[in-house]
Length: 434
Image (cartoon, rainbow, N blue to C red; front, side):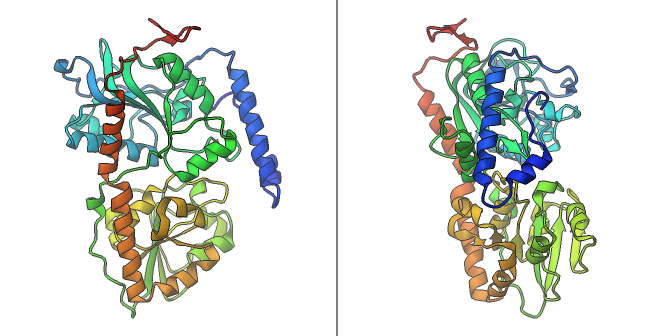
C-alpha cells in the first residue's frame, strides 16, 4: 500500500531471532500506531491508477426492488483465493435461502492491476444470484451491510457507497501485517465506517488466529465481536464415503493451496519432514510446487504435482488418504479453507498446533518432524476411521451453511426496531449529518 511504512527484510529477519519475537511485535505496534496518527490528518484520495471493472455486460438489478436488500456485501471483486471463495459461498447460501443479496465493488489498491472480477463472483453475478450495485441509480437500503477485508478501507481507497443500513459489519480475513508490510489500518477502517454510516461497525475476525493477531497488534484496544465470522462451506460437495487405505499400497498424502510463498515452509528440512521422500508414501500436490522446488533444488520422485486450478478440489481430495498442511512460519493462516474442505471429505488432517483452537480434537497436531509418526498411526484402520468421522462431524457442526444463515438472522433480528442509519457523517454532537 503506497505511503504505509514497511519494515526492511533485514529488520524483519533481525527481530525474528529466537527470544525476541515480542520485541518484533512491539515494533510493529509502534509502526501501526504511527501510521494511524499520520493518516488522521490526511484526506482520502482514490488512486486513478487502479484499473476499473466494466459492469455493463452484467444484468441490471430488478427495478421492483427499489434498492431494498436483505444483505449487501462490499468487497473488492478481484480478490483471489479465500476472501473471494468465502464471499461466493455466503452469497450462494443467501440466494438458496431466498434472501436478496447485493454486491458492491470497492477497489483495493493492492489489486490495482486487475480489471475483471474473480471467476466465482463473475459466475454468481451473471447467473442472477446476486445483484452488482455499482451502477445502481437511486437510494440503496439493506438490513445488513457487510464489508469484507479492511484493505478496501485504506486511506488510498475509493469513496464509500451511499447505503442506508441497519447493521454494519467488518469482516477481517487476514492479519494486519504480512512480511513486514502493513496490509491495513484497522482503527482507521473502523472510524471510516463509523463516519460514513453513523455507527461503529461490528468487527469480526474469521477465526482464532486472526483474533489473536489483532489483539496482539492493537493491545486489545480494538473491540472485536464476541464470535468469529468463520468461513462456511457447501459440505455436500466434498462428502465422501471414506474407507481406510489398503495396507498393501503407499499412503497417499496431499495438500491444496495457492502457489504463494507464504503457503509453504521456508526451510528444506521442514518440507522434507512434512512431505517425506519415502517409498511407503505418495505426495500429491494441487496448486503447483515452484516454491518448494526452489527451496529443495528438485522435487522428490514420489511427488505428483498439479497446477492451481487444474483439478476440481473435491475430485483431488477424493483421491488422497491424508491432508498434510504446513506453511511459512511468518504467515498467520487466517482460516484454512482448504483444511475444512479436506475434513468435509473425511480426510484426517495433520497440521501445526496453532490450528487447534479452530478445529479442536478433529486435527492431528505436530511439527513437521512429527508427520512420519502421525502417518504411522494412521495406518491403523480403526484410528484412521475414527479421525475421518470426527473431521466430518466437526466440519458439519462448525462450518455448514446453516452457520451463516443463523448469524445473518441474528444481525437482522438485532436491527429490528432500530431506525435505519442513513449514509452521512457524524457531527461533533454524535448525530448523523444528512
